[in-house]
Length: 191
Image (tube, rainbow, N blue to C red):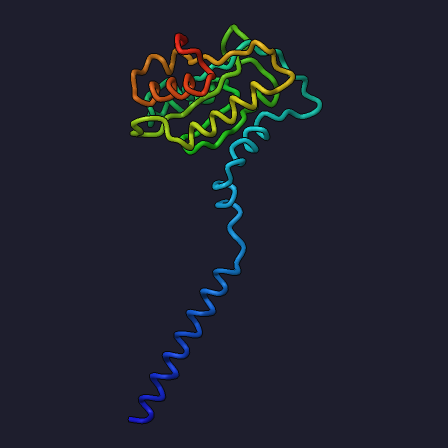
C-alpha cells in the first residue's frame, strides 16, 4: 500500500511539473508573426502601401479614376472564370479576407481593358456572403486611401463602381456601395 501511495505522489508531481513547465513556456514564447500582423490595426495600411509602391525605374501613369470590378465575368466555380480573371487586366485584387495584391498591370503601369485611364480594383465577393466582410472592407478602404494619397496621381481622381458589380443586385454589392458612401469615397447620388 505504501508503494502505491508513493507511486501516485510521484505521478501527480510529474503531471504538475509538466503542466507548469508547458504553461511557462507558452507564456514566454514569442507571438506568431502572422497572427500579430493580422491583429495589428496598421497592417492593412502597410499592406496597401506595399501593393501600391512602384519600382524606381517605372514611371507612374496619370490615372482618371479608380473602378471597382469583379475579378471574373463568369459564374464563380466555372472553369472559364480563371481565364476571365487573367484576361481582365485589373491592377489590384482585394480578397474576401481583406488581402490586397497588386497585379503586374499595376507594377508595369499598363492600362486595363478600358478606353479610360482607370485603375481597376477587382473586389472578390465571399462565396455565400450576405454582405461585404469587415476584413474585406478594411483592406479595400486602405487600398483606396493609399491610391488617393499618392502624389503622382491626379487630384481629381474619383472612385466608381463598375457595371459588373452594379449588374448584380446582391446584398454584397449593396453593402459595398453603402460602405463607399459612408466613408466618403462615393457621393450618395453616385452609383
